[in-house]
Image (cartoon, rainbow, N blue to C red; front, side, top):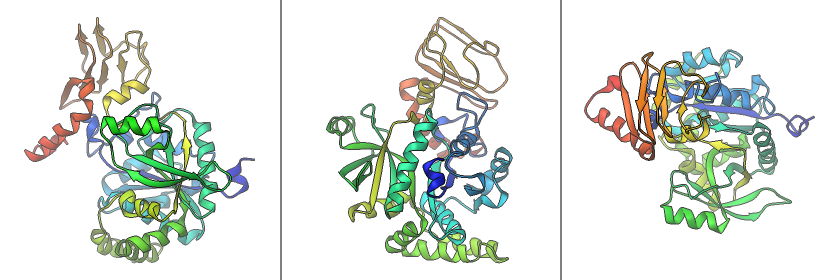
Length: 373
């Protein structure tokens, strides 16, 4: 029997929001990256996230928070998740409102429940290690800590936030989190990694719902009061009316800014270091690093490296090719490029500038080309 079964199962909350603008033009507002099979298997990132929780949370304790635009697609991909466990936001209000809504709905069912919050667009290579780390985090949550998962850094990464760790709490492996650090410059990131006191902030959380909601009330009373009103009406005929009235008034703020940073300064945040092959699939270069490649380092997203139909490569190295238009994609004599072919847009850029793809989406927004977004 697993630890999670002995001590009470987790309520798993999956946040299915955001558009993944660095994966444009594959990821669009109408079909964002978490709905795509970018896992090296037929499963979408969203499906892989839910399946990863199967040793921690029975399927009736898995909740998904998503927007109106994606609710139907989410339900189609997750037929095993109970319909009432798909919580639909009327509009995006960032992660704090989404997480707080799930916490409040779960608290009505189980006031001292332990919930875990997970992004729907992360890849994790080692499921067993992931499960063990979540169980360790659940132990910290039972002690009343707001737990955040820290990833042992493998390089001075400037694209992630960091956790500054303090003393061991109890008999381990839980560490105090002294401070949340913003995405650093390269030199600062290098000093973080060398010190051994910092972990990557993976944006995954585990806590008792009553502890989180109390901390939300302390730091964000307006948001907490609004969520409380919505939760009270959740199982009543007034749900849609109250949700429509209150939701647009909620502050648009991330849970890190709204709750976790302030909680850390008063000693209420803990972490457990994890090393389970975590990747947030932020851009095409990163995707190319985690998916299987051919002997020359070329990655064709969405298929086995041995499959050759639809893509013709000659004397190429380290390409990331995304063929999703039905046309043949051919490349010759080039290296270190991203090539994305969709029915209405084609992207070509160097792999080392993959992070900048977001600026193209920003430009399209500024010029009113919303059909491409």
